[in-house]
Amino acid sequence: MRRAFWILLIAIYSLSIPTRSQQPYDSATLFAQLSQMSTTDRAAKHILEAASQDPSVRQQAAEKLPEMIDKAEINEVWLNAVRLAGKLKASETVPSLQKAFLLGKLDIGRPANMTMGTEGLLNDDVVAKALAEIGDPSLPAVKGFLKSADPKMRRRAVLILTNINSSASRSLLQDHLPGETDPGIKNLIKRWQDRVQQ
Amino acid sequence: MQTLSVISLAPNGTAAVTPFRTITADGNSSNWAFLSVGPGVIPDGQGGTLVAWYIPGGTGSNPNASYHIADVSNSGTVDRNYSAFSQPVGQMVLGDSSTGLAYASDGFSVVAFNISGGSPVWTYTPTSNTSSTNILISTTGGGLSVNDSQAGVIQLDSTGQPASPTASLLGATPLDPSTLAVNTWGANVGPWSKVANQQALVVAGPVMVPVSEWSEPAGAPQSQQAAMPISVRINFTGSKTPGDNLMFTGANGASYTCSEALGLQDCTTITGYRLWDLEGNGHVYNDASKWTVAVTNEYGYKGFYRDSSNNLQPFSCSQPLHPDALNFLQQPAGQQSIFYIDAPGPYWGINPSSQCATGTGVIDSETDTFNFQVTFTSKLSSYHRTVYYYVKIVVAPGGTTDFVNSQAGYGNLSRFF
Image (cartoon, chains in turn red, orange):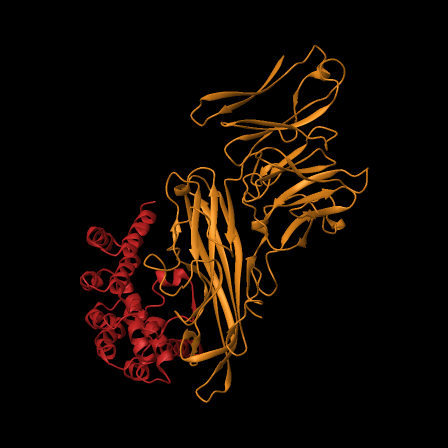
């Protein structure tokens, strides 16, 4: 009898501890916090963690992030939405990121300390970084950027492709190279191709 | 007659014999020429070879002893008799390639000489006649470290002037200095150390990695009597090396830089950054394309910014070691020089609520330290060489770039200052 009691107690206790995969997330609260300046950083970390364990959180993020990125006000909330889009590889956000990309390289969200590698890794360009992290689903948008008359846009597009570094992105770069008119961008592509081939 | 020759064996198995000196010798062996056994033959760093040889001297055709070093190359031979030596040369090393110097010792005197032409530049002799002198390693900028059997380790500068000896390092043996610059946060790291009496001790100064393929008497530390596969130099000031076609600015440069000159640059009015432009240069003895280059860095900064009410507020940020990209890297096949450039530095303003990011909080004062590790790895073997260096940028109160206290050099500094 006493033994049965202990078994029952352990069984009840075990059921009361959710495993990591079963951990419930209050998604509504998390996304509400993501939209508040005072809680956005913490919420972004929690969403990232939750999405790695619960596919439904990722799906909710993919649905909510485009609207957040489309907002005109660029602040910490907006930055976190863009960063989450990249980290979650949310291809649903590409149209929104495509519009944000056209705003140009933003002063906000860049690391205060720079190296020439920081530029190469797109750590100073939050929108381009997100597109690169999303990977191949970004390629149709990036292909459009390569047609821009503005060499700064094309340079950012080239860096997205070098960071994706997939066979499709390498092909796109190779196709673009002969028509590139800016010697600096041409050189950037060639240097990168040389390194990859080595 | 006796003819001295250098026999070169190419990797493809072909041999070439280059006679470089003929002497008249009779049947007495004291008149013959001998190869100095200690150094034998070492590369001259310019495609030729340095050969140390001597005639013991005696009677007959060569009555006087003479001690020679010949530089044998495709363009000819320069052979010189060094009167400072009283016995056969026992050691030879090459100096930093920018100096064009080599050093030789007969176990007592040390002579620095120009590789081209052979002319002596300076001679070091120990204060005690009973001392013996061994070369430990040549150092960046034309210096040399020697071990005096009575005084200890002595560092000679580029003019042969000795610093105070370190007696505790009697009998020191060389190690690869770059491998000793282990990052151990909390103290200045990267001094050049030597091992003696089972103790690793600091001699002085920063890590010194001369651009030289034979900086130690036995050649590369990892491969005795073989040339160093790569030598590495970081250029912190001056101009970029001829042959380095990489650009800091313009269409082929980075977006935040403002000068092609090496050293501290105040670009705040142009791009918003204070930067230290630097150049890495690896010289390899096979092919630049047969190497990979990887850089990691970490940084920490702190200081005070002006808030919207013009009050000073503290700020800080620290980033642990992370891989960096080398987008500005030049290593074409068929060449022996690998170049890269970088321009680390801080923006003029930080974000008060996210202090690792740029923002509108104008920096009034700041100390910003970057630590770098660059590793050159051979694709053909497991050989790799890591060099540590740092950049410290100081902004003096009032927001002015401090050109006096900002510095860059070999080794690593603490991020937690």
